[in-house]
Length: 379
Image (cartoon, rainbow, N blue to C red; front, top):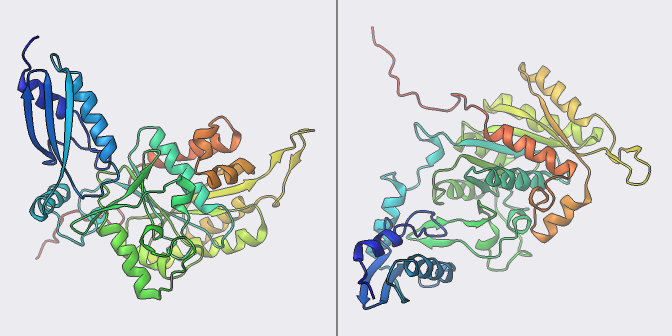
């Protein structure tokens, strides 16, 4: 049997990515030791925490990668746990020298598209739209994150089918992930589970949102979506304060009552110096499955009305980005944690969401809220 080249083993390990951080385990200081005895290779690995939910995935990836090296007949993986100093070093590596409590999305040069998905009232499908947009973006190859900013009415984990809690490393939160989308929510931080209410006043809501933005390791995101609570309350104002570069996307239904309230949510941008990217009309008309005649369950024209009134009120062009046809499978997929854009991408509702996701992910960033690194000349 040919002898095993240690450099080949290191090269194989360098191709193994941590499933949460998406970087090679060799770069993260996770390889403790490698011992070669004939055709048997023993790899000792440092886990970030003892209860790491991804330890089986890491073991499997190492076994496959090292087992493919010429001459290897058996791979043995031994798991250990990082000490406090190693975890601090890992946090420093991931933060790239950034100070704790800083929000990476506000730093000079950050190119993440940040969209705050808002609505005037609840029940318009805002969270379902947010999740399907995010999953469609991830499926197209973008790195995407969702902040479940609806602290009271959080629903993102369920819509994504997330059941595992985030991993915490030296105070740094590693977000859970599903369908390539990283997500953070209040749900896993409630000991009482989903039914436990969140009794926060304004300052605590602001602090919770700030922690989701500063204490979570998001990595290098192409797009960050915030699922805001309906209306113009504390979280909407905190979002503008913490993320001045965020643009609003307003979700409404065709119904006049929903549209009128959605206009108020969009008009808040004038006071908070935000940009409104566009309006999405959800639950629009659809053809009858029997006769083909259009059925308008929730009326007609709400999205266009919101776009027109916001354009006039803000003095800028706010487009109607699209009308998502009513489709019960959006709700069914949400209940099952299986977004429609993946379950049936050819469905009219899914196709519209995929089209809007592509436009949002590829939209050029403006300069609102960005530091240009310029100092006024003194004369």
